[in-house]
Image 1 (cartoon, helix red, strand yellow):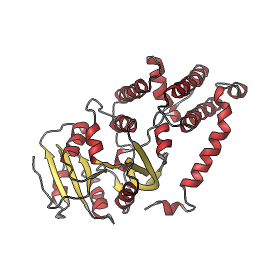
Image 2 (cartoon, rainbow, N blue to C red):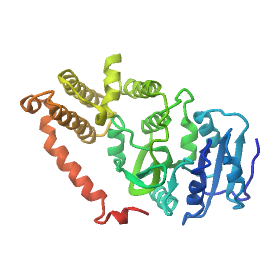
Image 3 (tube, one colour):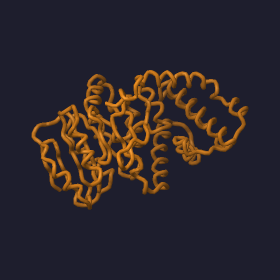
Image 4 (cartoon, rainbow, N blue to C red):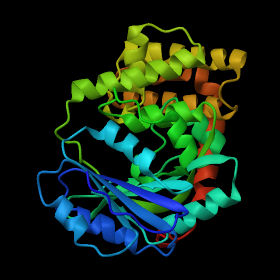
Length: 347
């Protein structure tokens, strides 16, 4: 492998794993080198690319650019762990080689972590872009650490290319190499058990969605089950394989067409989780109750839309008594998080 070193120890390492990204790599690199915050190194680990990715990196003369090349492909978990080993910054910002960082991303996230020493890592909201860089939507996630902690049981609260973390924390946990997919779900779920995590309510990263369109969906589902199994086992709730598979499906309600059996299970399961939390206090309240009620409301609305259950059935559900408070809190959170003009959210 070849290494290009920079002289001084930087405050931040921006880590970018690379594999056959000649079409998007230059835009990703330029977005980092154009940051308003300058005390960083850009560490690129090329995982045996067969295209011109390495030549593109070597065309940059900026001394902050540092390149490491794997002669053979090692896979994304090993590549990410190698980046953690090589990082010299106190903080590590992640950006994938097909994504784009907004100009003030590092400035915003470094300032946030400096002001909040109890926070181990911070992400942000994301703008979804297509292959041509055109905006195709937005990804909004919980921001407050307690809200994040509660929601992480039900949704993926972070995307790796939006994260900036304390390097020593990342090194202690690392990426588990059995996770061919879903490394971020597993990593941030484990870190959240002992550390506080947050999101900044600004669109600081442009995320190219659909990058894993050719992935093995059956294998990805098994990876999600493996991550969920770890979370639920640590929580201490009793579950079987059917509960586990349904819990993973509950994390992606947009793809559900719930029938009566699933609605019955969902109501029982969410109540069991809340009862377990009353015993263990593993997740902050009332945040977990609100997160569970949000899941139930989403499932209920989809079930009603599919005409799988009648309205009177939904109105008898145990979680209905939390619905009004949940909706009011969600509306209040949206007002608190979002400034009046959408443009002001883009750093």
